[in-house]
Image (cartoon, rainbow, N blue to C red; front, side):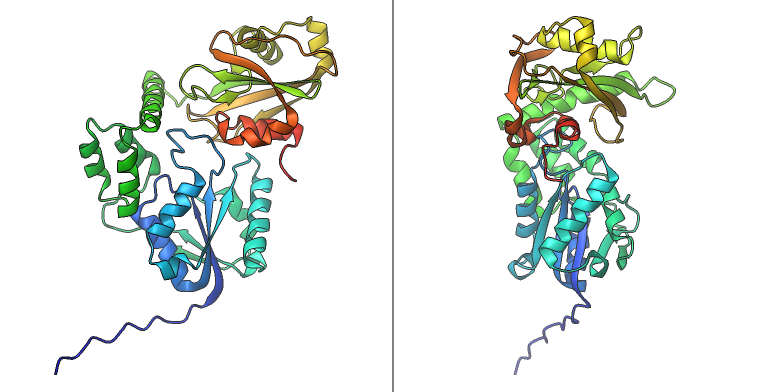
Length: 359
């Protein structure tokens, strides 16, 4: 009489909740291994999806909802039901990032963050959001030794650099979960893929142009937040990177300009808004530096954002020029609804001065 193999016995989970985090751009095989380990250790798992609400770009080709769907689809239904997803903005402020994680975990789990098991890769960099859980138990997972590419950027380069769709997907196959591979295959040839690939080429060309420098370059830029009568001045970018996205008027610091002079020059060149220098100085409310290392896809870029409030005067006429396809005034209450249309971290800059997000 034939015998059947006994079902494996799964040991009881030792924790009520676990948490793991990542960008999952794209979802790799060892990302899934990390999530499976968290599911093995806890009854329920919160998966933090970093970089949520960013505009699509070569660095962020998938929205946070798409990433959540891929993770669910890559797991058995019983395991997928035990997951909870926490989309997390990157606010350029370690304290705010940490508080956002802490508050989100508490809301999803009903537990103190100190009691939630943190499951992290042993060799990976830790985001500043983990500051909120310094006292929490931690489980470090050793990297796999199967030759998998661990760098998400390298995998995205393989995808965008393929000389043919089939060849590019073949290179990705050993590193990605099957569901992710299928999703990326479905994007190849679409307008969305071609736009991302064109932007990737521009960024690659810029990196290659600086490859001869003896040190990695650090770029200094200026941006201008201009408010008038409850409206905020924006541009729509005309060139890659970020073609078609909303942005603040701004650009690279000129050799002979002060920071303020550069900011005003960029406003004038991109929007044709001209005011006497004395009025600009009177309207200046503050200057803040934004220097998060990953804030720009172009490389290490430190910007000095200037906030001008022009009061309740009639809105000056503006028009797009230089590398701005369009210049437009947008009502301040409408900005939050446009978050996913902003270039790089320009929405974060706006939020810093105008407090668009809940505290």
